[in-house]
Amino acid sequence: MDEAYAASRLTKPQHRFRLRTRAAIVAQVVRRYLPDQPIRLLDVGAAEGRTLLELAGSVPRSEFIGLEYNAALIAAAPPLPRGVRLLRG
Image (cartoon, rainbow, N blue to C red; front, side, top):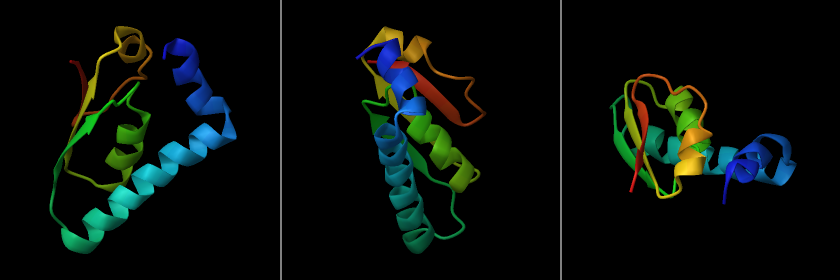
């Protein structure tokens, strides 16, 4: 996977659907079982962090860490807000 994959997550409907659906499911679980509590979430294989960005908008006051091996995907990340970071590993 490379920058082209990261770009496709913005343009291909199936990729956009998949990342938004994953984020929505996690946000729903957090709201149900941990209402009004900040969380710390680790995403292994986070690509460029778009799923974490979706989550950050749904679960406020939380910390999201994405672990990604591919440096090109990390470089393709959009600006990340406070509480969201990507690490290479």
